[in-house]
Length: 264
Image (cartoon, rainbow, N blue to C red; front, side, top):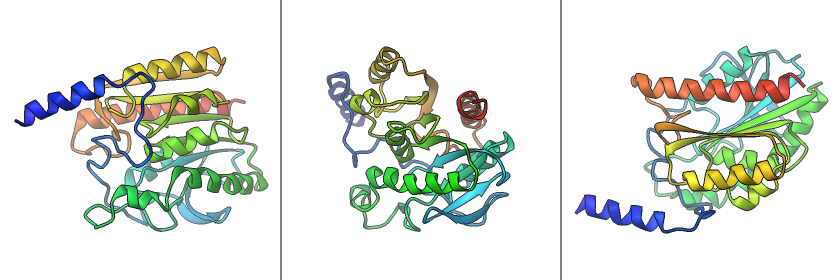
């Protein structure tokens, strides 16, 4: 019966038109797998306030190039995310991981559902909160900003990429990104997607590619085989294949940001 139900779901999904994407609040089936154990003291960096938000920062504060790393629903205290920030900092950037949830990340095993949580933590609010943070960074001497977003954060970064506030964007297994969003993107953008992600099926990614190329927006769209939504930040450390795939995506992310932020 379970297998039969699975094939029914797949048939329904495949019948959806190209360009379809679930609206905000509807999650990919892998979205909440392997949640992190949050750790407020993890990482070689520190926590400071920037533009009215707490943020984990890593790297030399005198760097002229900053990268915003926008989290998934589990927030800025996720160890894997902070490890990525430290990796970004070692490449010469000032890495900034904002707490867009004001100390209230999504928590599994509670009575509050993700749709309920999103009522106060929507991506529109996240993208608006990013604006004073970027302005505050510029006041410290930062001359160029890039952004990378994971899941929830991928949607936030897409919205920021419609402005001139950043030089480049990277979306890692993003959630709820639509054709209309992509039509409005202004900056070089890389979309790093999972093969096993019903939120960004290959047909939709192909449509994104066509739109970006038609609009003469520099782009990279890459599908990583045999990985699930969320794999770049919620991989299992004991799974060598998952770790290798995550590291490959991190390397591709850094290459894109170095090309369009650091060297400009």
